[in-house]
Length: 168
Ligand code: FES
Image (cartoon, rainbow, N blue to C red; front, side, top):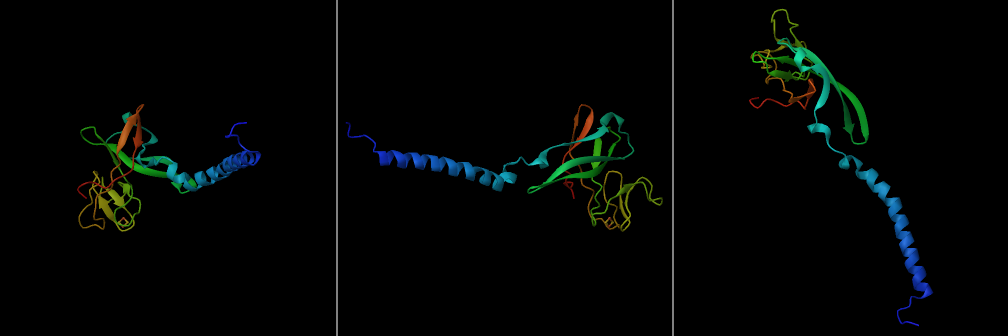
């Protein structure tokens, strides 16, 4: 008999420790995973969201482009529909503006104020913006409309997250 022989008591102790540890890990892993799940998920804020707007169909007249995305709030996911005002400027560049008024957050419309044609108009407190989204001095908004970064994919417009203009 070797001096290193494992006793029956030691063998039982090792086996029970190993099995117990394996079972404990099996029970704890799902709990840990559930607790930190939102942290592990990729953040979608940097992604571009597809729209049904073809770039080729855009003209110099702003059109409202609706898009839907999944909003994640911790463990709660919801479908959110939002919109952008999109057109091509005189050089053919695509301009995508946020419809959220920079005064108190109402939704601005294009060309609905008869006294100020070809302007974005906020009906809440008569806010006005020029076509490029600049706020008209003397009206409540104190900053230009936010601008969406965008990409073109397969001819369609994909929108990023609207950002304030640098000069704002
Ligand atoms: S919220 Fe648009 S002008 Fe006040």
